[in-house]
Amino acid sequence: MKSWIRSRPANRGLRYCLMVIASVLCGTLAPLGFSQTIPQNCSTFNIGIVDDIRALPPSPSAGQGFLFELTGGRPISPVGIFSVSQTVSGNTIAVDAKLFDLMGFAVGGTYCYRLSMPGLAPGSYAVSYFVESFDGSSSFLPPRLVATTTLVIADASASVIPTLTVPSLLLVSALIALMGFLLFRRRQQQRTGS
Image (cartoon, rainbow, N blue to C red):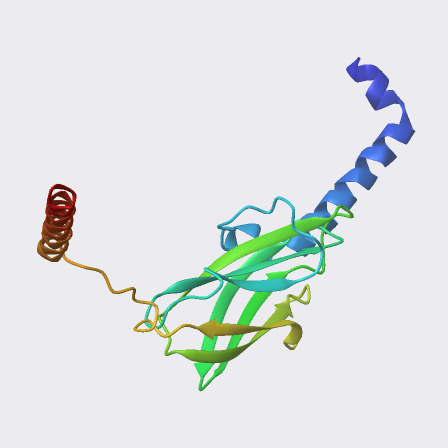
């Protein structure tokens, strides 16, 4: 079998061509290093190709930490995430993701990442989601706005439901039982007296 491969000049040309293609692909992707991307920490099932950002839970309470879920897709794969950062300034939140999303295989790919956010003061916040794409050489393209949303942080004190303590519940139960007993006794006296 080896002699047949060596005797055919077309096979040497084909092997050479495949080696050149492989080295070009490796040379293009090697400086990037897929191992430099951070792992996606949520499910990419049922994600469209439109970039989106949403808060989890949708209306967090003041002072309570929450998550931003960043999702989207591209006509190429794989889609890698290098880093995600956030900036809070007044009532504006800017989220910036650096993605490997311009080069790859001609098969669609999606991404999903959850960013932890600190607790914020109550109010309405304008959220802007920016993406910086890796340009294929050694830098990122300028940030582009891909999604916006409004986040409402609920006042934690307004969401507290007043409740009774166990001793208070026992006292209320005893008063209701006493009133029931007195009402029953009064009805008994009215029946026997009339």
